[in-house]
Image (cartoon, helix red, strand yellow):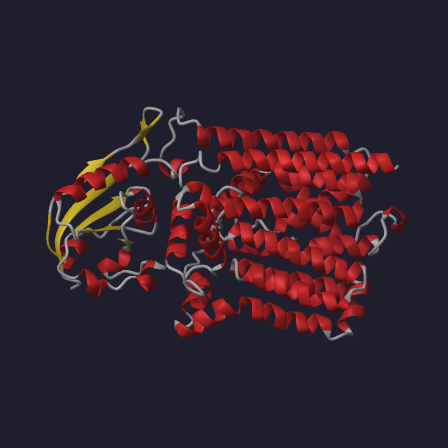
Length: 495
């Protein structure tokens, strides 16, 4: 029995090290995505909070680029480190719930799932969110299963750091409320002060973003709540279909369906016999605990998808406990290995195919399917124009993606600007730009067809004169990736 347990531990460790080494090796090989570049811009403008996301990924990028430099490896090392931590936490969490064999399969599935694999190499709020989300759930399980009531302070602080990563972590509160109220072990803890003190610990960890909001008229909270609500459309089945299709792609059909099945079964307590559970919580409590952190997130974003475009990564936290429940139930139901092998094979095939598409530029991708392409060619063209214009000429772009990529790739990495120079909201650019400092200066303004610029008349309103635009069409595999339009603008007036 001991040798078998050591074998599963060794297999898991070998897999984690192998997949992590591969991910580390490809970090500098992938073109910088607009998200990488934009969130790197956060780190270049240090603050305790930001407009459209909390600051944890900015703190992370500031640290890693200070060590490795402002390059693709330095920008992405933080997400890679978080992904390694997630796999290690997932191993120990699943082992405590079900045993080492199940823990190996949980780590294997998480390691090859496209959403977690590709996401581990891009700087977004999701890697720190998923790490601290997993850490909080792991600590919460140990607090309940080992009756460590004081550990709720750690649970709350980790949950607060998840909130400091991304607002989606608010669903941790719903999950812990369900786990504490609807399990026998949880109700025992509710009679102590520790779960309530955990709320204070979470607030302390999240306080930088609260302070930033208080200093900026609660702009970020409003943007992510009332403004988002105001953007809801009429009921649309096509939006729901798009959400469903994206989830089937990024987690694979078998894993997606299995997570839904396992989460629903755990919530409604249709469990195998108690004798099947390991030490710790009862079998029913274990599966309810897992479902509490998957179903509320899935249900909320499914409802939202009927009236709003739900991005493929928004459901990511739900899959952490969802796939643990899936593996546990697969073993409870008997003879799971063949089925799990099929699930892993399908997910791994999708992940390998995605890496191949990203890393091998022979495929004729265009538009949003190739959002990491075209920026180097654009930067070379803009640099040539800068050389012909006055020294104080500044560079701006429509949307956040163009100026962020240009800031990274342009010679000397000059400060770049966004919609705020044309009187529109530039997301975080609006908070670190003083347009009065630009008055009288010339500008190179760029728009990408992947983010349409339909207000060209604004250029004439904000500059004394504007030359006819240049056009640039970089290619990939013989096909145009996108169309850039580049204007030379003279004498910024700021209206």
